[in-house]
Image 1: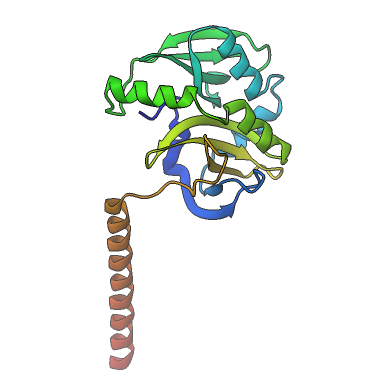
Image 2: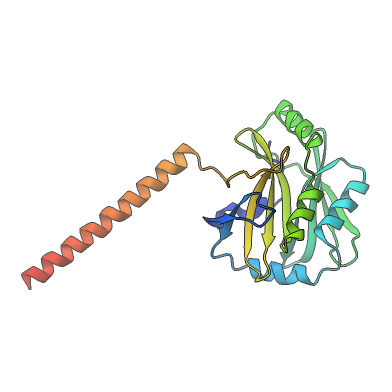
Length: 225
């Protein structure tokens, strides 16, 4: 099970591995490229009177389970924190006002798209409940290093429970990092599957062959001229 807020941090916007993130040496950063919405979200979050940590505490106090993920959202309908709690196999999405901290709505999340069984979900929830590093601790560490946390969630990566953070630095650049939920040690980004790597390698080879063919054709035309 990969328990995530609705946006799932928009992985399609992540580009190249950028190096180590300033989380006390923990984690690796994936820089966002071409995300035209990121700067608007960063700006909107800077005006919020409630922090992501506050929103998590509010959702916890609602008593509908453990918080498994939270993020700040800026949409055409306004801005809000989206915090997910889980109790057994039941997930609730809480929409929290970034100005007042009030819960605007609490809606059961019925979209199960990860394909995991109830047993798998129960196993991961147990791991989350036993995690040594909490979401609030991870936020405190990141923001203690000058980052602004825009989103956070538990995620299982290659069998290891991690905490994934979406942060903005002082320049407004948005990046993503992951730490081990048991140790706080770095989990080096998202590992592409073998198929993905093969596809990327094939695409790169095709691009290289296309460029080479184009160069050869241009050279031939120049010689004929």
